[in-house]
Length: 309
Image (cartoon, rainbow, N blue to C red; front, side, top):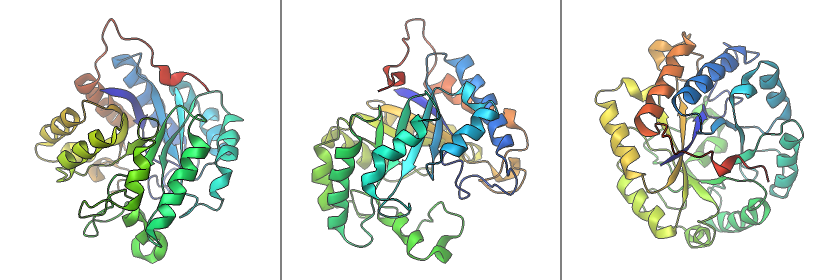
């Protein structure tokens, strides 16, 4: 069910990790080392993935290597949104992968790539096909972001929200399905690639879309899914009941599960982007989730997703 454990999400993006608290990412690296070792102790065959970096920055990878974090990771992941937020063209995808490949010999995944329909739904159709053309066969895993549009009543996980202007509102239009569940034109195009290009779909605590999402993914032929289990959510009432329901519903997919989001009361600052007060607490959360959902078995084999293309 779980094919890989991802540690954090976009750690070099200040909407996900606060650089004022940890300007050199030393605390982040220490947390990754602790979590990586804890995951390996529970299941030594499970790949440990660096949460997808955004922007794609080889200097950041070298920084983590200098801090010793890469020694406790098996895969490096990147995120890219060249038609919405990045300062490079979609045609540059192979070059961006090669920039990271030049600084590490670890497999490289694209754990989020997507195109919003903020301007026009036809743009997403063209961009999806071009993305598939550029990335399939270039990396072992691709996760398209996302299946659903983000409901407008929710908030996007970004630091400055509406002050970002159109950049903020693009977060709400990344789905293949509209908020009401109706298909966009890109859905039919995505189905052509579903067996090779998985999905990234975040499920909020007690997310009402879970069952419908599973039905859509099976209908599309999706094999690979990236989602998350939130450390912060683990302190909610009945959190394990929700985690169990989510993971049981996703049991037919190869899931990369992302562990992230600092509980406000356990951060150096009271915010989900903060470095934790005690890194071992995050490591124990990761270990407990692996014990619960991906325990090691004597017959387990090393994952083929670690093969370098």
